[in-house]
Image 1: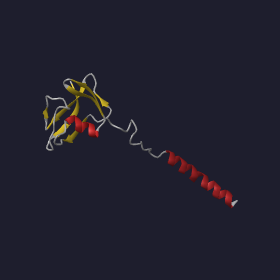
Image 2: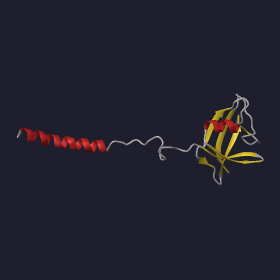
Image 3: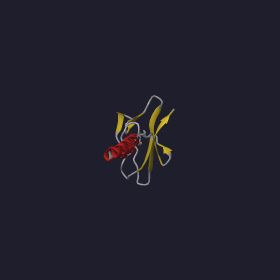
Image 4: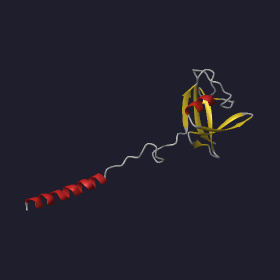
Amino acid sequence: MKNRKIVLLLIPLIAAGIILTGCQKKSMPADSAIAQEQVKELTYQGQDGKSVYDLLMENHQVEADESDLGVMVKSIDGVSQTDSEFWLYDINGEQSNLSADKQQTTNSDSIHWQLKGF
């Protein structure tokens, strides 16, 4: 009889533990598509003798088209341009008239890429 009372007391406690465990907030993995926000701008420092494009490719996944005028960046880290947004860069706050592969940098340069709409 004593064992039966103990079992009857334990059942609600076990059930409450199961219910509370099921109600805990679940964390999303950091690489999940929902948890990951697409970055539409980035900034990095220049390096003597390296182009804007060289430095971009060293640290990011890049897709680009090449032409006689130079490269046109289409995608950075999986974030692609659209019909109304394009990847553009500036150096020290000034837009360049050169393609990223033709624009050389120095150690004191700050390069800023942004997906800009028109």
